[in-house]
Length: 297
Image: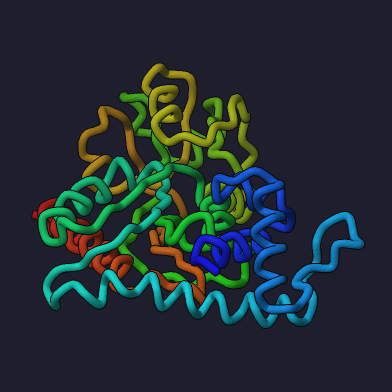
């Protein structure tokens, strides 16, 4: 028995089929089947009920799955256990929303690399809702997202990192108009409601009983800002203070009182990445605090 076989077993349980598990672990479906057959021969027990269209774990399979998770967790802790108190080692697969990637995350990764050069962080971008699913499914170790709003996977825990505020952004020359007036009179570029931030914006618009003239629905903060710069409409988006300071746009507080969102580090409740994720969270929070202090001067 090898650790790779145990990881294959975990992948089948997470993704529901031998074919999908093979894609995740880099094996063909037939190779996955051979690995599981070898594992069943070794333990003398059938691990999957193959009479169904999709394989289902037998009672023996559930026992092996649970114990194999413990074995893999212990193995994955070896690198950290061998490292000294001041230096971490290991790999962290991280997802992040675009606003974090254009804000605190790059500098935090630089600081993390200087402090712990044996840590490797693999980063993927996405929207909060899709990143949460990837963390829940075990495809990512952690993700930097908006604080979850319902519905969201139930097996997640999160650590607050920093806060962004929501702003109505309009082309220059509109600062003399109220946010309500701008939203009523100019075309509205909507932040996609599939994004958690988009749901928060939609809820506040309903509370304010505002009827907007929707022209576009977009999921990228950068694209929305370019559209507003070109005079194609107004939008509501969350902005960090350092990014807002660089914009040549009219920015007015949105919400009564102004809405805020927390940006958090998401992890699975049963697979927290421990010291690696904690070190990254500390680095992000440090950068966010430094930025906040400089903006307040």
